[in-house]
Image (cartoon, rainbow, N blue to C red; front, side, top):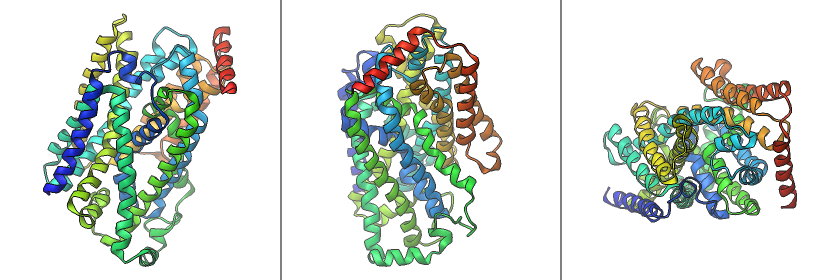
Length: 493
């Protein structure tokens, strides 16, 4: 236990040190929430993917496969495809457009600048959606941290949630965007190390690759087939679509999109795309393998549905020397923290840039806005902690709700804003409202037909944006000229 705690404390100390380094460097709002657009290819790629995957990668997905079988891997397939397409189709265009369109620092600000509106409705509505859905998303991170500490150290779950939240708040509060990105870069390296090492060690513990393959094969098609459920029945087309559609969510994730906006030069994104794609494919593959290996190593029934999300922790604890197990546990913390810190920062930037100026109806200077951001981080963390205190809450369920919300509210709007010259402000607002509310209603109805709420939310948001735009007048000449300017810059690069 001492060795594990030492490893975890060293990891925490390193994260806090990075926060301290960037505390004095974050003097302006641009520095605090976008790092002055100074990210390199590696940091942009690794921080985007680390902030993307969260505790879901090392706890949620392996746990789902451990308990229900390989049929749960369709989500991973959808996410791998979505990651690549997001970098290919959205990243460069968004980086160029946000700089051309008023040097936008946040996604809501980009929408307002893109459509040349000053009424504030767009930024206020998008800011409120960000606030609501990130509360749920951040709660999933705190819940994962609580379950981790409870499992490893044996402390009360509620106390564990508060401890994990306090560490994340500290370095995000201090250093802002650059602290978050550099900690995410280190966390991304730590995550890939852990998620590759644990299955390798487990295979050796089982007696080698041939034995492991045989044991997985003997578990039967209900466990090791992509097309069978845990009860042996065939997985329905609706279930597969519900899993694959997760990939659509990427184009609406503010905490990922902001990495595209912050890279130093648009030309660096090609290298970042390759790094990010390799990272995510390896990570998702190994995450699925951990669920399979955990099932045959620990035995069916060793973990219940409620505790299956700890399969990665249990394997590391049983198979690794104490200090290395501590490093592996730190990787799970890294997965949790790298997402939660990014989410807190996006909420803070939205409140300081999009909500407060509209509510106060006056501009605040940069130093005041930075402190508004920091206070927001604390408030959001407290509310997210309260949500996470229910130890029966599922990491997977919390993440899926928030993921659907962002993917539907912002995804279609981002795509049409970047690719459709004719797209109008009213169409964008309609798309955002319809997408976000559809998810909230669909989830409150307990996902009718078993269809993941992102599917109807995304489709209806897309249709609403198209329909309202076609009924609206054409955008003015300034908007169309700016769109053409972006197209020209993209073709030149």
